[in-house]
Amino acid sequence: MNEMHIQSINLSRLMREGGSTDARGEILDYISLEKEHIPLEGPTQWKVAVTRLEGEGGQEFWLSGEIAGYAILECRRCLTPTPTPVRAHFQYMLRYQPGLAELQAIEEDEEEILLFGHPDLDLGPLLSEAFALELPFTTLCKADCKGLCPVCGANLNEVDCGHHEKPQTRLGAALSKLMGDLKD
Ligand SMILES: [Zn+2]
Ligand SMILES: [Zn+2]
Image 1 (cartoon, helix red, strand yellow):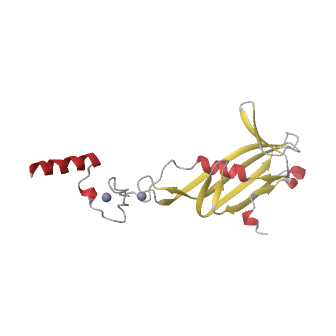
Image 2 (image 1 turned 90 degrees about the horizontal axis):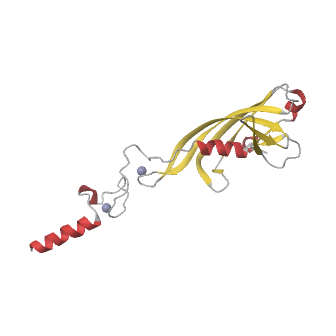
């Protein structure tokens, strides 16, 4: 069993004795969201620390963590899949509610509290959400990416199709050909 790939933290000891505990690991290949997957380049590292809060019947916990890696996004100019750095910090107030099947967010005194039902807390949804929130809307494969040729669609970083020297639309090209024909 490779502990690096388990995205959970066991809070049994914390529930009995109080104090703090932490866990770390890696996510490979992709981050799973409800409706999509974010493909990853290399291992995405995460670490999480949980502290039991005193004076709440020993059922409340403060979780803080960090996740960092490279998401593969399309370059906004040339559409090449591009590894893009993502780093997120996150914090949650947790409350143990035995028997609850999955994480549930509630609001109490204008504070969000996550309810969880098992001492083995599944970190997957927390890590995915934190990562997704920090995902940039767009990326560039390089600062001076030349993009795609608007005439033939060639990747101008890779080939010189010749069109971009006189940028023009299809209509412009048709008109100048027509004007040329009229002159003859
Ligand atoms: Zn590009
Ligand atoms: Zn072209």
